[in-house]
Image (cartoon, rainbow over all chains, first blue to last red; front, top):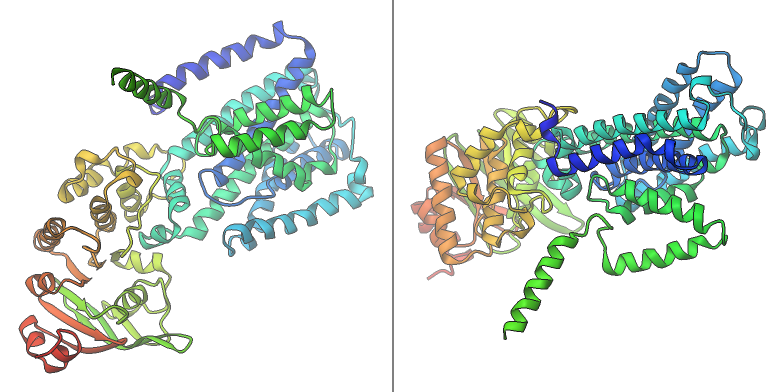
Length: 321
Length: 244
């Protein structure tokens, strides 16, 4: 019943990929298991951002804040209270969604770029709190060695936790995108004025989308704590927000799975090129320039097959002449 | 059904609408005419909430709707099309119409139900009635100009409006397209008992279809009457029809 709303072709590919990822930790070295887990967390973060950027048309410039709030709230509960571990897992995402609602409430009154600019300023306030409040947050050092419950503390078990939660979240995001809510959201992206004229309360709808997206960012935040065992203010810094924005653009912001690809590319670049040179962002810059010129809709937004067919057809036609 | 009384809207010193009066009865096909810049589109934007009036009142079914936001006016039963094709270019034709049908059926906030299975029948019926059913899977942005304008009307029909407002439905159309579109509008008015308010440049079109005509000049209403009366009116002849 539920299954037949997923596109059949990509469904087969996704199941195959999922099985491959399930057996991966048994084969690949521990370091790569860790990198994959980092990619999953980042992919979830980018996917949550893309709900409002690619499908909602909002310039959510400071999405990292909600990731950071989720990580900090979850991490502080684990590190500084004796509450059971699952409280942290619930409180992190909810705190992120509440923050998303409060910040969104102000930003949503503004349009386009002004929306993003106000979000950066309000988000930076939260960064300052994390950066300066030494007693609570550990300031610029952050908090390290956060006690993670035993059953998910090894690199393999945290890998599986992250993978499973990522899959659940992706299914939920897909359902939301295909629901009437998602349909109206995409319509608002295309034409807000017309949407208001067909009876949709545009601002309320966008705010609801922000709350949903920030909730998933909070989920990514608490997963980050599980994988890394630490929190630090860079999680809320605008540079990270920019990075996830680029992941969406790079992977294809009008596609569903594009941001996952974008996250994989950027995390790999940072990890593998980053070990050779600290100027790995230079390579990212070159990739971005090429992207803007040749693939403005991102890697997945480009229909390679269709282009190849039309190209080969043209080639065939001209050879007949 | 719709009464507009002494409506005014100024943009700085420019009096875009300066005393417009309009009356639309249920089941009527009413046209607004006037030279370029007479304030026809501004009047429609005021009625539908895209703009807020400075003075005057707009009564719809006895209720003042002059200060309401567009989405609430739409929920009261007024749907509109725009002068420039105002569609959702990245969505398919089907989903363009479905968005407004879902909104009408108050389903837009459902989160975990596949939209592909909702409101399919009503959406298809609307597409069939305007003749776009065979193009329903096309991306709306790729349609021809004429089809975009028709789609525009179809989106408005998705709201099952009591009053349908069409802002120059045939703007930029070829003569053939114009006549098909006007026939479509007349058929919709008859079959579905729709009340329609529209503005138009083409005089033949207006006098051939409308049951009541309101003439605007420089933001003011000169007259609203039956087509024959309007044709006879001296002021209108001088102002608009060139006079004799």
